[in-house]
Image 1 (tube, rainbow, N blue to C red):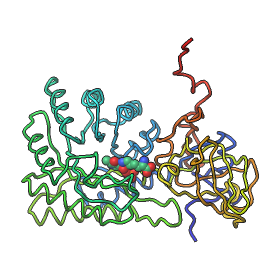
Image 2 (cartoon, rainbow, N blue to C red):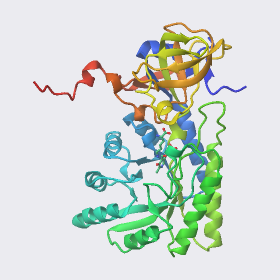
Image 3 (cartoon, rainbow, N blue to C red):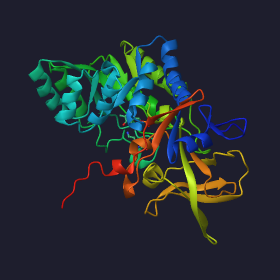
Image 4 (cartoon, protein in one colour):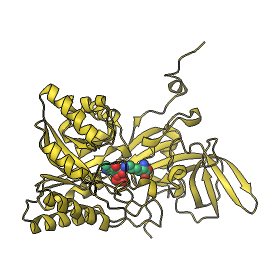
Length: 428
Ligand SMILES: Cc1ncc(COP(=O)(O)O)c(C=O)c1O
Ligand SMILES: N[C@@H](CCCC[NH3+])C(=O)O
């Protein structure tokens, strides 16, 4: 059976051709380690179908999944666009010297400051979410006698079959212009009439961690139907992100190309049927670019056996570096770095070190016998792990290393104790 990880000659877990135990020893734990080659491969896989078909496109990495200077550098090197959702992500991209023309800006409540930052730095496309934003943008642009390319984010009423907290395409959503009530069409007319706005097209994002193409086809078809109904010929249709990945053996993700083909084919067929030009197709994968490439390395510490119930194996990280199990009941798999393929002896719950009963990393994990000091690797933690990390319990955030071709480099330093009080001020 094919494993979702690599091993080296010693039979140890290998990340980017470096032994995971060695990474843990050199850089300490907890540690986020990324296999850069795997990320590059995913980016290329998403782009390939567009290239082969000579289409106008953008594969825009949804960087909320993992936004650091180094990540933006790799994305730029791979000819990716990026999607940002805050002034902080814009600032990080600027520091990475990411080409601002290839940046799009999503979000349901972009502040005046953030929108100002976007237009003053030549950010390529603003994905407008609501009427308030249309108004603020108009004022900022008119003042500066500038125009701005925008897309309109539409809530197409397509609900992805995924965990309820992370579906954003349905009608009862804080995101985007609602279709059924006529808001989306009104927004389009308002934007088209605005001399400072250049409406490139429409955008929809239906949810996250999706395993079939149907939702994307439905949403893409709906977008084409809508623009046709509104008598608007878009230059761009953005089908969002949400492509599912393998966290555990229960997940059966589709290849990047399958999603891309389904989206392209739907848009091509629908636009052709209406006698419209084929627009550029944009997508926004986040999780699927960085998720499978990321590993969280921990050192095993204490253990508690509750007779007849279960055993808890505790590691030196937890919900501060990976909130997803606590927040979404997300499931992960873990292996021992020194013997990932060893037969298992028991099933344990991998818990963190935080003062919270829900601080779990893996709910049920079969493992060989372990001892304190062993390095445990949780797989596929590259998306929404570091980016959702916190300093809860005043634990510092782990370092991040990028590993490629046998070389490892720290791209985010481990937070120190001094970092934890850096912004504190004495009261007395
Ligand atoms: C607008 C938008 N685009 C793209 C994404 C990326 O989603 P994922 O990381 O699941 O690909 C998200 C997050 O779900 C999003 O809200
Ligand atoms: N943070 C979520 C995904 C949210 C997507 C936001 N658009 C996760 O960890 O799966």
